Image (tube, rainbow, N blue to C red; front, side, top):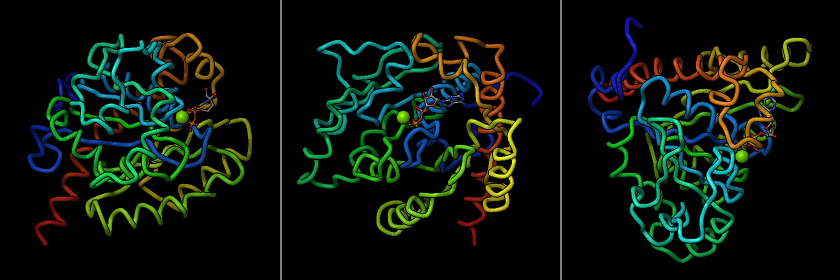
Length: 286
Ligand code: ADP
Ligand code: MG
C-alpha cells in the first residue's frame, strides 16, 4: 500500500458492485471462549485506526463487546434488541466508541429475549439484514459479535452477512464444532443468503512455545488453505486484561504483540476485500 487508506478507499474505488455499500462480516463460531469478542473489539478498533468507517454490532446477550469497550448501557439507551424486535433504525441506537471511526450498537442481557419475541414474527431470520440495509452505506465495514450458539441470533447474522470471520482457538479439538457451523452456513446459503462465504479463518491464542499450537496451526492450514489469515493472534495476558479496563488492546497497550497482530489482521482484511469482490464478479460473469 502506498498511502494511508482513506475511508472505504481500499475497496470502494476498485470494486463497484457487491461491496460498494460496505461489507457485513460476522465474527462467528458457536464454541464459547475462542476469541470472538476479543477479535470483534480489537479488529474493529484496528480497522478504524486504518481509516475505515466501522460499526461493531453486539449480537450477544452477554454484551461483552459492549462492556469490553467501556460502554455502560443506561436505562433509556436503545440496543440491538430494539433494532431487531421493534424495528428501531440502527442509527438511533449507535454510540461512539471512543476510537474515531468506530461506532457501537450495544447489547444487554435483554437480547436473550429477542429469540423468544421473534419466534412468531414475519421473516424472523432476516430482521438484521433488513435493519442493516441503510447503515451499510454509512460504514465501510460492519462487524457482528455473535453469541456462542447457532440459534436465531446467529442465523440472523449469517443471513445478513457478506462473509464470515471464524476464529479458531489453537488448542486440542480446535476443529470440533466447525462441522456444525458449516452445515448451518450451507442451510442459510440454500434458504436465505446464496452469496454467503467464509472471509477468513483466524488462529487465536497461539502460543509459539508449545508444540500443540504449531500442530493445530498446521492442521487448520492444511484443512482450509488460503482461507486462513496469515496473521495469528498470540496468546497474551494483556489482551485478557484489556476488557476489565473497558479498552480495546489497541488503546490499552498499543505496542503489545497482540495489538500489533490485530493491526496486521486489519490490513489483511482490507487487502482481502477487492480480491473477494473479484472472485464474486468472476462467478457472476460465468
Ligand atoms: P468468545 O467471544 O469466543 O467467547 P472471548 O473473546 O470472550 O471469546 O475470549 C475468551 C477469553 O479468552 C476471555 O477471557 C478473553 O479475554 C481471553 N482471550 C481471548 N483472546 C485471547 C488471547 N489471544 N490471549 C489471551 N487471552 C485471550
Ligand atoms: Mg463472546
